[in-house]
Image (tube, rainbow, N blue to C red; front, side, top):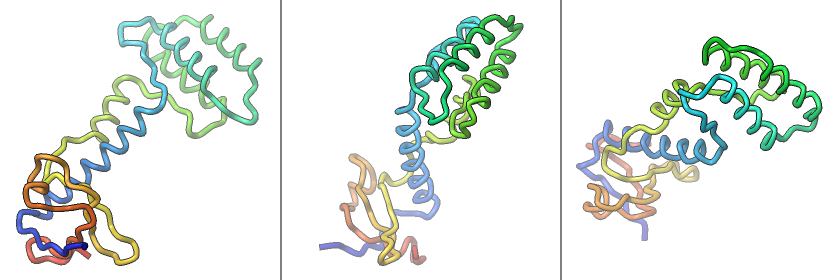
Length: 170
């Protein structure tokens, strides 16, 4: 049986933070599934360029991917002299643009860290994963996380949250 709750321990700000934390965790899991460049900041610019090239060579799927042109691109990239890591990053980005795929891109370690910080967040709030029941338009508990205020209060999967601090959720 689905219960209808009016939990007084759920504040709107904690609920929002918990929802964003859950979304951030999902984004991190999805991002973690993709291959990542493991070259460190101390690696030579050419090592970074070559590692990115190798990943694209092994993982890229495209109808019009020209293996011969990509091999020539590698030779051209490795023949260059890079004064800075940024020069290498710029060359990598141009090579990836040449693939013509808007979803293939390179993030520098700093950009990747910024993205991770934005999408990871910290787990805070009441400790519950939520969804909106599209049919009923009601905020619904997916699951309470263990050892959190939500689990201590007895929230269960399928519970509907209609009000928080007396304010309607829908």
